[in-house]
Amino acid sequence: MKLNARTRGLFLTILGLSLIIGTFAWVLLERILGFAGIPLNLEVGPVGFDIGIIAFSMQVNPGTFLGIAPGLLIFKGL
Image 1: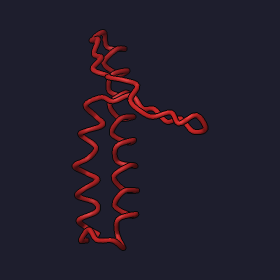
Image 2: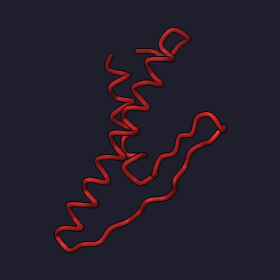
Image 3: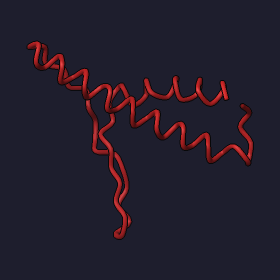
């Protein structure tokens, strides 16, 4: 699918979901490795914004960026 004004919302939705899924997958990997006795913590953050009424923050880790590729492939495949 091509990115244009009509598909921008879908693109941002898919990209946002893939970032969140990548972040959670990395946290799961860190916990599994932690139970195995291999400490791994590459998180940065929290990264986000706070405008007084609404606040959003997210721990950023390598899984966050690794989630971008599948999101782009899913969008391109639609």
